[in-house]
Length: 69
Image (cartoon, rainbow, N blue to C red; front, side, top):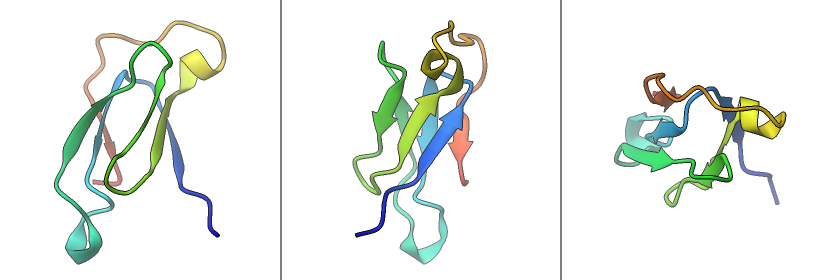
């Protein structure tokens, strides 16, 4: 079984469309929450805040990441 893709971002909100095209899904905006990570309910990609993963503070004023828009 293949592992799901993990995408590191600098923001606390990620946008995911499943890589677009005919195999994609509707664009959803996902809040990484206090843990600094979230899994897309459509495609199971995991978005991780890079700074929280390293034990730091996230950038709070950055625009949402576009996961393979």
